Image (tube, rainbow, N blue to C red; front, side, top):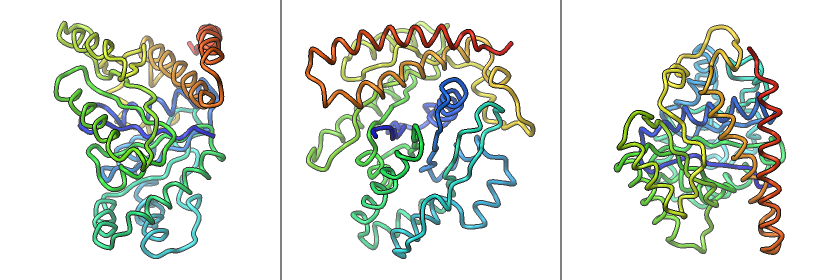
Length: 311
């Protein structure tokens, strides 16, 4: 099943981890999807967003992170299953009980140095490929929060995942990260690469004429495959960095238009995943007809989701 997605931009500071959090919680709450979030960034931002501090510190000190799994599988060649390092039932949204997390730790950077020093890149990629293949059959969607730049681990996920999504701010520096990633993808095509699922225009200032100009400029480039729904910079999304000590509703965390924007985005995301997963098996005329049906299906799903809105 083609359902593994790495989320990255070569440029940092584009709201990547916050977007992964929002996608995971929306997909779980409103689409009923089981989600595995893999924190592949040494900053461990998504781990801090999904898990309360005592639980995360216990996992890190107890050897239950992506670092511990990869050290065992790649450097020590152990046979431990990746499932032993996954934390189930994370998130502070009471309806998002189907999210699991492979947490990260700052030692991930040291692990990558050891991989490069010992020339273990091929074993790392093989491990990542086998892991994602197993995870894809255990979860509806796998979201990988990859670090910015192109480290050895980020490259492995880009080459082994089914798809990649690139969030970007609508500004010059952030969009240069998209160009860098596109150029990297075009190198060594025989090595394989994830398929571009699309660009999410993120952290947009709706009152800024310059942001709107960059938004339109990005959409005029077909290779970006921009999602129709951009995500504004709003206080509600900035506040997701503070995990609640008690469970809360989805609407308490993503109120009003914020939740509407996220559900529009995930409707299109699910449609693209389902469409791209079948594309290689269908002739062009069938693909076009399916795309029209998918559009109608998305509109019907949106109407159904609006009826489920929690006041």
